[in-house]
Length: 132
Image (cartoon, rainbow, N blue to C red):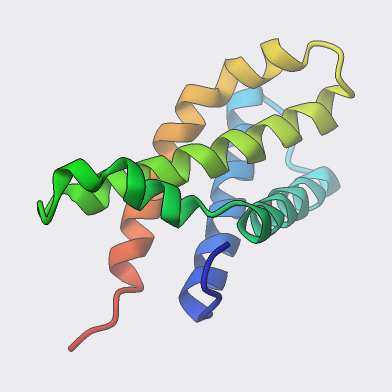
């Protein structure tokens, strides 16, 4: 479970828009009323995942070996992003396909979405970082 604040909410909204827009473009789907619907699905999935999964704790535990290394934060962001993008993209693929061809639809965009999600998460982490 994450700590809720303005920064987390902004990141959730932006990540939902970016992941859904990227999936729409990669899948060759039209930008119609379903784009909004699937953006809402992505946002709801992300928020629900944050309620249920201690991804920050997992990321810190999995990167403990890095100690105080300056790049540790990038690995933590990658781990958290990997978890959320996996969940969001699986749910969206399931909603799009109804289950038939789920794995093929999911795998067709998954690696791209992980990379796009990671770049977005890194950019948001620094854009929303409190300034001294």
